[in-house]
Image (cartoon, each protein chain N blue to C red):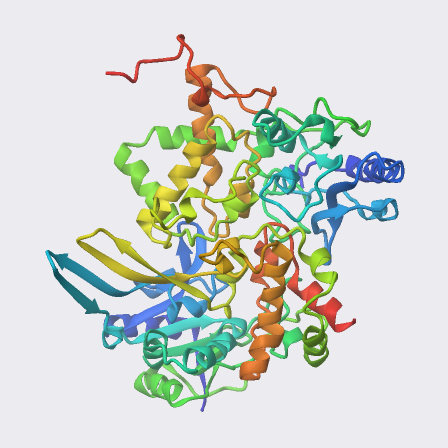
Length: 334
Length: 306
């Protein structure tokens, strides 16, 4: 279904949804930083910059309670958190690199174990994607086979058009339902051309060649030169739309506490630190190698997909300037 | 732009660093040089370790050379070759951290070859490294820098940076926070800390966070909640600020790398201000075995004992 919506009507749509008790998540400023979060009203939406963290946290929060306990004498009471209580959500203003990562994550969260925390949020969320008209030299969605107007992962996709407003295209029943339920805010497409799309300048990777090299080079001196400067923080993994490792810890007192699931990162020394004291990834290049292997080999081996959508966040915010686009490009030329 | 900052000397500094690195590596007076090199993105720079004189031409200095390379010399970075003299490119702010590490017996002066950089300033953020260095894009620490020409190095290119008089942002921000009521101040930090995702970039770039087992990573017993939630986030940043009091000399790397824009150096500058007022002590100027918080003196302020 093709439609048109003006900027004012898009805001009116968000306000209607909020008034209906729906949770609307969109990019907005949070203590000075652009982040996805629930809108109180449409005035707070910020659509001119990529949020610092990706949209994955809508489905896979930074930290969430998955169980709680109380202990009274010998009596222990366990309480589950019920995903059935998760709110119906509209996720708006999602850039193609963020939206495309969501189906990539579906694969791992619905594989042998069905993660109901992730999957229930997925079922209850409608994703409104937004095409990009600007890119910087850290953007590389085109290098991994996506594009600034790729609707992958979006239920409804918006493309800014000349003179303001957006061309809308629906891709799923959820997207159609959103349009049909608020039909008065959408108009028939009037043929106005789309604004020129962003043009990321990064060379396209030959992902097959990259994988072929990774298949044979678990041990290679290149890992040292690539990652000797990696300081071992989790900024790349935590800003990444596709990284999905998590840790589970119990926090509380003897009397009461919670079991919590929170983001983890393979860059951390502690990530593979065994109880024996042994660490199979004892030095940072081995940890960084895992990052590249997981994204361009292991995930492909298992799910036939690349675990990278080219958003460029890890490049912009790596404390020591590690540039995954440059690294993968170099590998594809080996 | 009227407030653009003159970085023209960085070309000559780059050449001088390359020549010196080539000399010391070819004479084998050092086993490696830790410096900066250009990267793919326009204007970008990244840390590099070179061990061959032929690679000296890769070294650069520019306004994007933001990192405090001292972090690579600590025992936390096992990847960097140890067991020989190492050359390192240092700005004045980086040098203060090295001075602290010498005082804490983490490094030996005779195992270092210090290449000091006459520095006019670096960028606050390298998310967009091609930005011109101006009064708006310069790192806040550079606005209050008292060490544009590092002292006591083995080699410093013969250049003099032109520095502008810029109003101090930290001093102004600390004054603003000090003027708040405790409730207002608490509300301010709560907003900031709630963004923290426990990526530990602040810890990993800090030259003084060289503990091989961080207290905040322990789970038996758990000292600080490890999950990224308000309580554990607040505890983490306060623990860190206290551990750095009297040690942190203000390279502000923690603040630069925080992907959530938490103004972490404000905590460290506030602690430094307290140390200055209470003990007339400033970290990073002379090699001292113990800072004021690690020793007792009869003349110490005791007004806190009520």
